[in-house]
Length: 120
Image (cartoon, rainbow, N blue to C red; front, side):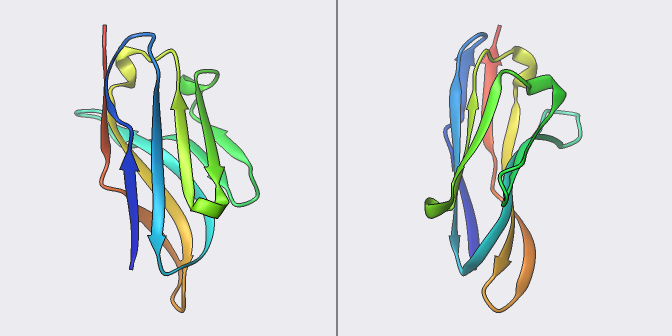
């Protein structure tokens, strides 16, 4: 009933930039918050950045000052602008949304993931 579709991943050299997008679609009544997590090989999935329905922002310390999360409520879309990328940013990036489904209540959804690879 609800889908999160990510785009914008790819291969970039260290110091470069990428912009990820995630669109939520389906039987959505409201979105409480949206954000990005990442998982590198052999590591646990970790929070990168999250924006609540009220606009509060939360960033991992490792990306503060380099990444910026933003949201277009009219389009049910969240963005992640990633600047000054480092090889250690290499991971699969997953979109996450905490939203209310029409007639069903609050649920947590994940996108399929998009690969970001930063070469040194």
